[in-house]
Length: 485
Image 1 (cartoon, rainbow, N blue to C red):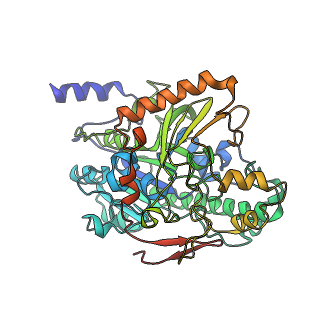
Image 2 (cartoon, one colour):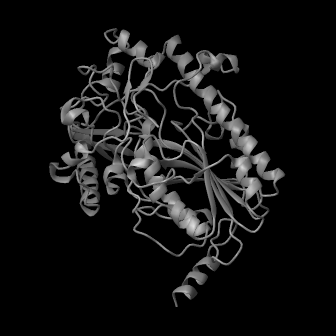
Image 3 (cartoon, rainbow, N blue to C red):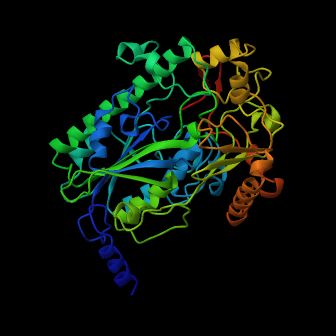
């Protein structure tokens, strides 16, 4: 009966993104995961200051999601959530940057490999961290290889899953690359949480040049698929692990830290083209989607919800909202032997962003300095923008933006998105929004209770005691690695 029901389910999912029985021809999956790429930095999302023609090409052959969010705005927990389909708080020590992802927690890599897929990755997979300290003999993202090697080795009748983990557009940037590649810093749509000065415009231009490089590499991957005769039977997924490496963005639950691009495409005559979907997606939804495409019936415990029905046009609404979380990013606070993070939870709806800061006595950007370490505001990536904002923090124009990106925050934040898309005007104490705040507060509390979140009721100190598998210090201008493998 179970097999019959699964077969009937597959028949109802029409179009190119349908699932199949394990014995049927299964699609290849190419997963391209960028590093620190915020929405809306691509021409397909309306940003005309940079050129991303290959993303435009993908958009013509699939679905562009406009409300995709990472589960956590930090590399390791975000990537762990994608691999497992679980919220990071359900991953034990995997909730923190450079934490431990328990081998006993099923990943799609394990399940796809078991089902006969050839699985590999290149460059940045599950990271940063030392996977050898957690029971893995290889990176949780699969076997390390380049795409050419996989295409040469895999047989015509074997499906593959390949994770291409580019390091773009992660810092450090090559100074001046933006201008060299033709990006005009004066025409950039600068986020309102950054001071509008040449130093920062040039820094953002350099960031965008790395997005363009990402786009060029996507084009190269598509060409390789085409030459190998694999393009039409490959589903291509493009996303980012978290938002841009600037103050008030990465490592924060504000939109520029969690709102990321997501495109899912396939070059087939059956594709309805092009489509946009405004429903909410959490990137933990990718794992069950991958399993559905592969026709894998085995389902471990999951928080993610498959996108197959949405992609097939059976549903227009995937999630009505997303829940977001963040714990320890870098080692940048002295409490708990340097292990103290900045615990946050949030609910993001179409109209509102409500955030709970569970330890508001701590510095959200990390302490400005820590004894016997070179750490300086260690949860903000080092670079020209950080340097400028630190050096000019007392100037009238910069001061409120420095406060927003670096200073202490209250225990509650509420942002009205239509009026404040950059999340700068906290309305949590505005009586006009008291009813709205109460509703969002209750929905977030209900979710935490349902999830048995360790931070509910003031708990969660064990998270700050989890040891990091590797160590690094974030400075004004960059990063000092101590024992990264």
